[in-house]
Image 1 (cartoon, rainbow, N blue to C red):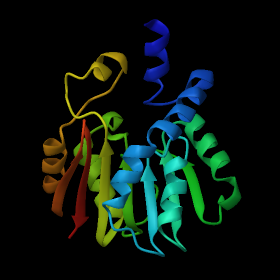
Image 2: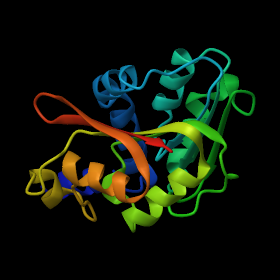
Image 3: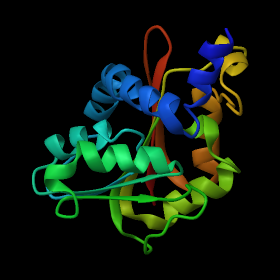
Image 4: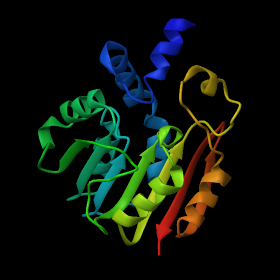
Length: 203
């Protein structure tokens, strides 16, 4: 259990050999959730998109495929994640894909930059969620969308005991926080057994 817990605690901020293994795991295992959730967003060609908590960079690739002529940015608090995301997207790095290190609480982007912001399996680890949601709203264009994709929706999940620093929010809690942050047309989509996508629009 000690090794298992050590591996999965690297979900929050992958580091070292264990972190690199976790990034490979996440790139593969998050695919079903990501593909399902992104299909709900109605992504259009030519969008400017930000993926917060970009991990190993697979979501950046999936976003590029869904938006021809797009520019996709990734940000992650983990130096290991940034390195992996840059490696995975090396062919289009600094052309269509731009990756940097940073926090959801203080995004290094101008106001009204993005048509879409995504957060795949990452809000569990964001500090001060209301402040982070305000930051997302700030960098979105008017009418831009924020899509939160999660696999764990129950606070008493086994994962909260395994992954240190993980805080689980129900889809309804996340929708309420989006509403409080000023997002409109918020909606919840569910896929069994526990996947959910929560989407809000900047007024």
